[in-house]
Image: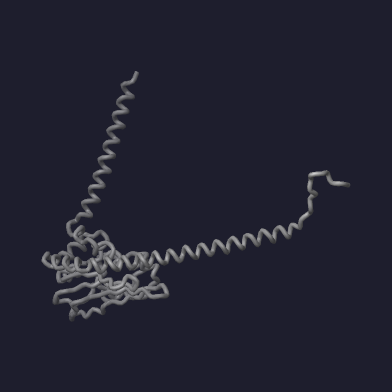
Length: 258
């Protein structure tokens, strides 16, 4: 049989050959995609390094300002005690005896020498009848293997003094028990943690102090946080009241209709 002019005869192809060709193209596309993804990751790493450099720069710039702030705070009686007791997450960590000790707290400091390596939270105390130390510190060191090493001051309690329940309390989860346990047990909670856990507020006290209380303690000293919450609640109540009035008007109009 002779093929009609202008028409090409169909040549049978092997399905396995087509499949091999498709698989080869898919592998090649994935390899190219991986190269692009690696390039993106490289840029992301450069961006992270740049952000850390900027953060480090401004930490150093803030330092003298924090020192000036601390000097002013020292002229205000019970500043840090008041700020702690006004903070919704920290208030429950101070039992009655802790509050007496906090009256001797001279200054609070968050020290970040290198944002890549970690930070320290430092409590400086006046001479007091409770312990020999004048500086209590807890340090968080970021390790290369993705864990955080925690070290804390071993408090030298004076005779007859010490945490209400004594010693260290091993806390599990994200919350610490309130009231009965002493805040000062926190310094001896130094087990090593995965960095993910620490950043996930497993050491809730450290994160709250570093990220919330320390940047603006005046907000809590003045109870501005409570005022903001109450204003929000009042606004919600007013909004509901307006809605109720509108509903009443609509009901009245319906009753007037024939």
